[in-house]
Amino acid sequence: MKTAGGSDAAKRRAGERAAEDVADGFVVGLGTGSTTAYAIEALGRAVDDGLEIRGIPTSFQSRRLALEVGIELTTLDAVEGVDLAIDGADQVADDPAADGYGALIKGGGAAHTREKLVDAAADRFVVVADPSKLAPTLERSVPIEVIPDAHTVVADRVRDVGGEPTLREAEGKDGPVVTDNGNLVLDCAFGSIDEPEALATRLSRLPGVVEHGLFVGLADATYVGTEDGVEVRDY
Ligand SMILES: O=C(CO)[C@H](O)[C@H](O)COP(=O)(O)O
Image 1 (cartoon, helix red, strand yellow):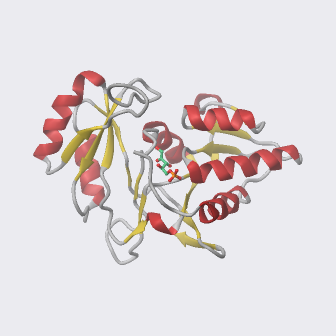
Image 2: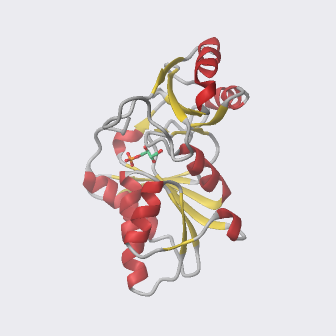
Image 3: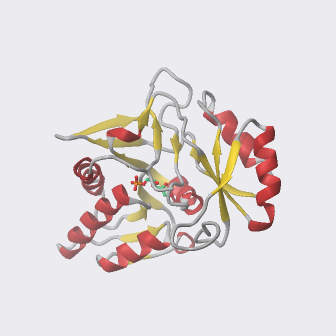
């Protein structure tokens, strides 16, 4: 369920702008997806020019790209902290007057469990997005990573809290998507999510849920690439 749409030029501007925030010696969280890929590629070019950083990938995809562009890798348990995390989003709550301004829906690439771990550990977490990701209220389906044995039970509990779950099917493979952690993903439609924090708390409490894709109160800023520049939202 990759996010459709969004201009590549806008994604590139957002990703490259975020890479400019990385300084010598930084430990950098490397998110997943097509927008973050532009940041990782820009960091690779900076490394070629002498920048010394270590990256913590959040998925097989970001690990492979980081290795390809020459970024030294490390792990969360081998560092004292993460200076900056750069990551994409499937939707960003963009109404400053509403509950949960800057809350995100992530997990379009089924990587949200490791993304949340790394993004939450960072001193600063910058979201990179194009304008198609902005919405006054979150309303996309929320991906929930579940251990395989729990998928029917969690689906029932999601219905109890007003959601409509769909097991994410793989493309190019028969059967469901299997995450980098060996789990399954339920895409759960809740309609308009007016209270993202309350829903996030409810989903976190369900037994069998590994992690859900609601990121509330985690982002420090969103860099929105546009056709002619980058708009910054600070939270
Ligand atoms: O959450 C994610 C992966 O789990 C991605 O960051 C999200 O899907 C955005 O991807 P893209 O930049 O390709 O639109």
